[in-house]
Amino acid sequence: MSLLMVVDDEERVRSFLTRSLSAEGHTVVQARDGVEALERLSDVAVDLMLLDLVMPRANGLQVLGELARAEQAPPVIVLSGVNEVAARVQALDRGAADFVGKPFHLAELLARVRRLLLAAPATTPHDDERYLAVGGITLDLDRRRASTRGDEVVLTEREFSLLAHLMRRRGDVCRRDELLHDVWGLTFDPGSNVVEVCVRRLRTKLPDAPVETVRGVGYCFYGR
Image (cartoon, rainbow, N blue to C red; front, side, top):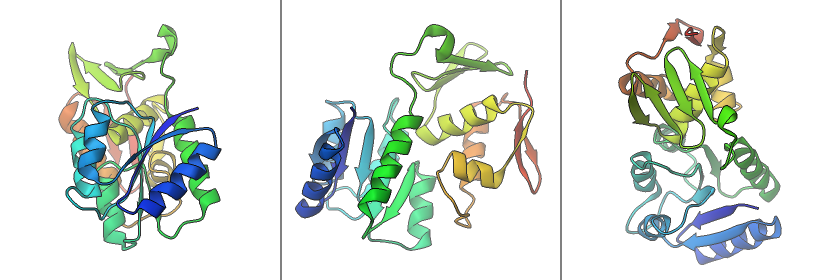
């Protein structure tokens, strides 16, 4: 199965999640805070991280910030007792793949874990399946990097997922609610500008990306 990391300063939470995820067939490594998590990530590549927000030494938002600068980073599900909308927005803006409030229902959490693991690209795809080339941009689905005009750009997990979605739907207008659901895994609009911020970051990294804003509706990748 997959290698997961549980990052939480409460031992009982780490133990419970480790038992539950292990019962699903996964291998689990633990970290007590953000510093230990980042140290462990330098030694082992994990497929998914479950991350608390409020921790000593380095909190969850700081970990997300460091992961956003990494060449390769696992998708992150934030698990937190801080349930204010502002906390959710901050976590999503910094690249979290999902946000689950504590206390949580285990069955729902495991379903979210399965969804993200299934959405991850295969680690050894065939060459003809590895690259997505549209509109002058080549997207490496294995290394999660984009190339244009000979320059290679490293993307965050969220930037990669959004660009891949738009490229696969080239010529179609992707509505904002569709992007929130398919890329962010949200069934509701958090009332933030997470989509707009992510598109802005993509345009900064890939100035030639043919992504058109359809005002009041969403975005369209119009390249061929």
